[in-house]
Structure formats: structure tokens, C-alpha cells
Image 1 (cartoon, rainbow, N blue to C red):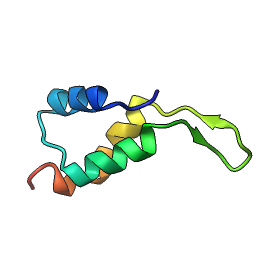
Image 2: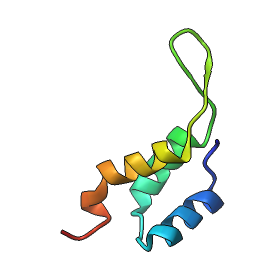
Image 3: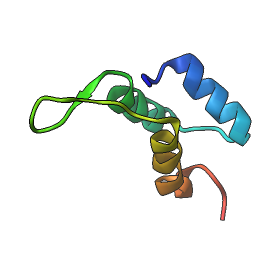
Length: 64
């Protein structure tokens, strides 16, 4: 899955959170293009990967 702004907006709406602009840019830069591993194989990202990154950065998204 390639992350687009539209998909990121849907995720943000479904979680009912506002994702900071710098985190949005970071996610789009990382998941918005096909990735490759050390051997040159294309890596497929899942929606779960994106949710995990949001969880890791939850301090800036969800109030404690």
C-alpha cells in the first residue's frame, strides 16, 4: 500500500485525531513511495505499519 494524503486523511478522521504537519510529512515521505530492502526487493507497507508509527508518535497526537 502506498500512502496518499487522501488515505492519511481517512486514517486521521477514523481515529478522530489531528496529525501534526511534520508527522504527516514524515509519514508521506516514508510510506508514500515504494520501499526497498537491502537486497533491492520491493517492500509492501500495510495500514498496520502506518497505525504503528502513529502509535509510536502518540505523545504528539493524543493528550495524556
